[in-house]
Amino acid sequence: MASTTKARSTKTVRKSRSVATKSTGIRPQSAKAKGRKLQQAVRDSILDYFPTLEADDVRSTSMGAGGEDVQLSPAARKLFPYSVECKNLAKIAVFNYYEQSRTNAGNYEPLVVIKQNRSKPLAVVDLDHFMNLVRSSK
Picture 1 (cartoon, helix red, strand yellow):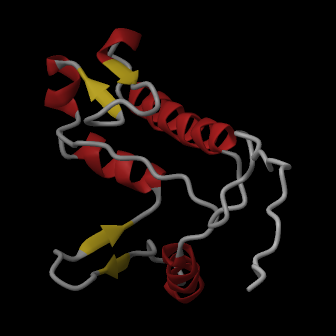
Picture 2: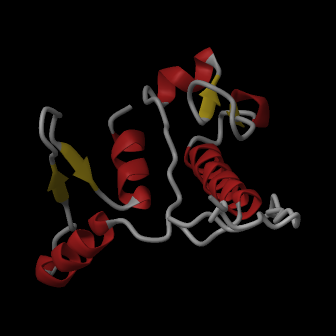
């Protein structure tokens, strides 16, 4: 009996390492740059709202490093007792919810409370409003 299998191609298809990921459509290098930019903006915001802090008191961590995205010195932690995790994504439904809240807010500050299964509810507010809350609580 003759074999019915086809001969395999000897060509190797190589994928480029800088190819965009399927889920986001953005190259990993670009995604890291977006995240780094957000971390630096949060760092700068903390330093702006607390002028007694020095640049070394608030640092943006390198991409891929474990732990907090914005590291705080003990002096900074006294003024800003939060652990910061930054996510800069193309589309998060929370922004749609925040826009709806903003549209309905009138003269009030928009607030979105989100919750997923088996998790605590989270409050979402504008970063400037949040920083004003932190500063006024001290």
